[in-house]
Image (cartoon, rainbow, N blue to C red; front, side, top):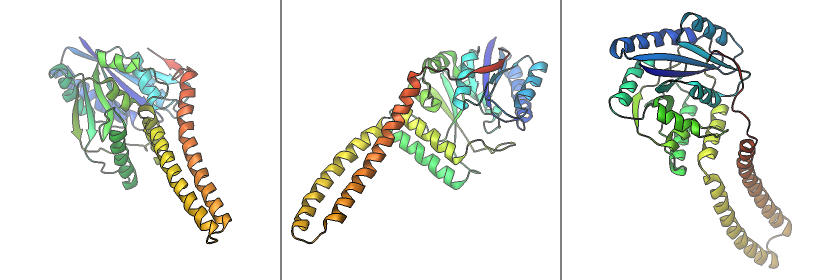
Length: 311
């Protein structure tokens, strides 16, 4: 028997868990007919939920031996939840998907076929539309993927979802990346392997509200850039050099005009100080962000703390 481990991060998702389990049951029924040599384990990772999420998962685990759970002591974030799920997955193939049904379980048989019959190491999904999303969110999301494509050596596909299936070899490779500040979409690209991309139209949540605000997505995007590119550090060096040259020319010109009595000294000095100060603060801010991530990596803290688990 081949085992499929399905990792499902959850944070305050009591409204959608029953819908998700119902849909997954249908998909597992399809596998029983089409791939009778496969078995499932569903690993729900409760990321410090404050509602009845854990209670509902425990109820499912009590009646279905395929259901398992890991519950964090607090909210550690989706990246930590994915890592915990991968670390505890025993399957020959590992699947990660969202619980809100924006990742349709009905695609799973096709994804499984890609790795089992077509020889891919992974089958991943990407949205070809962002219908239903706020326009400003869609705009910045597309700009982020284009920016990452230009400044990172790692491939990050536009519209890529976390929803994918991986072989055990690729899963182990992802786990070997011991980053504390994780950006899993980038890690998938960094470890390589053959991936088949499946496209689908955007699907809205079946219930509840998204946990990703614009601000959280912005921070997540910055985390991704810092994790897989040194371009911001390089660009401030180039900007610094360019500004130094410009200010040198400006100083020479200003000195000539000042000597001729055309310009007063106060506006000239104030302008130079303001420009240099603002650039220095900007450059220090970027460097400090990188330094803070390095600081957290060196502390060697665990990525999560599990409070309860049946694994």
